[in-house]
Length: 460
Image (cartoon, rainbow, N blue to C red; front, top):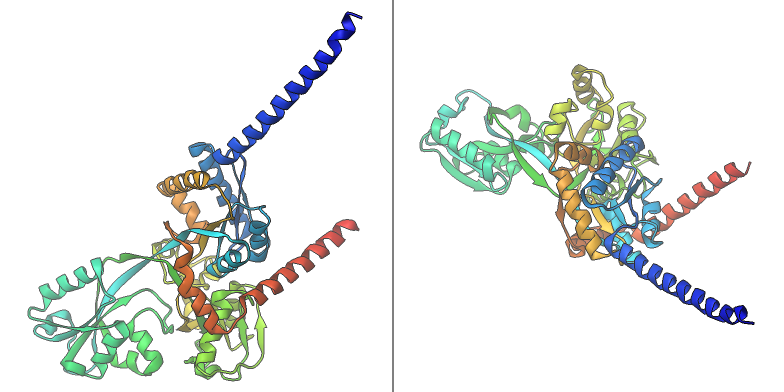
């Protein structure tokens, strides 16, 4: 009898202990959530080789764990649609995605933009004169001459150009113009007595119609390159940071297609139906120029477009374009557009130069497109984000971190951004007439079919 009287007490004691443990567990879980001790899932869109993304993503995860104690899991889903779905379902916390995918994730699931990828462009400055008898052949012959200088030449690049002109051509007179193309137009049309023009310059293929004011004007005014010459190029490039990239239209140099309008009724390859640079903005460019294409195919990726044009399987194609950076010069890929995805697999510089001269040229660019975005799911703890961003910026402060980041997103920095920064992009998307929601639904349907095929294969 005496021992049995303790049984109720023991039972109640156990209940109290279990309750305390349960409450402590809930509190502990909330603390872990706020502190970020729960593993953060970070996703990348498969824009380059998956192996590279996985390897470099793991490097970033290890650094952040050692630096801040945050546990990070880096993954690469099969498509941007899968990334958006993961953000909506709470299966992903942080994602690096194109601006197009971000605005969809924001509209549908409330994803929040935090950082934008910043890329570096190493620009040179050039001085151009008319090519002919009696025309200035060097800077020394520009003393007292009128020189068209674009507003787009600024900062360190402008300082270098002005300093060299002051040294070599005393008394030269600046004629302000909008950009490099207008500067060269003033030169060839002899406006305001201009005897020379200044332009920004980046490396481009010999038959590309992008890279500097001469090549840009050649598109509108054939013969510009023949009538002008470069008499001076700055010795050092001036790095410029850019938060935008472009789409481009490509053809073969021997095709005879020199303008977008020449592709009327011709075969054409877009990158992917949901690609902003390789389809949406490129198609908008063609439509603005009144071009009705012939047979159209979606090549399934930017490198596939470049290869299809190079092989002559299509008359034209569209893919992404970014000016080259110091990294392209260092690794010998020469250009920063989609062609470098093929060039980097070639063994020699001679092969790469031949490819740019004989296989694929760029004839036009689309409107600018915002660089990729780092966003978080709705409700992601702000305190955890602050720790993550702090570690990321410290990672970018190391050479190893910068190399890994470049391989992940082709960037050199990550600058803070907000959702409002993409309002102009939303408006540009609306003007293309493309239904973003319809494209997402199509991509999700494709993803679901892929999952069903994979499930069917596992069941066999």
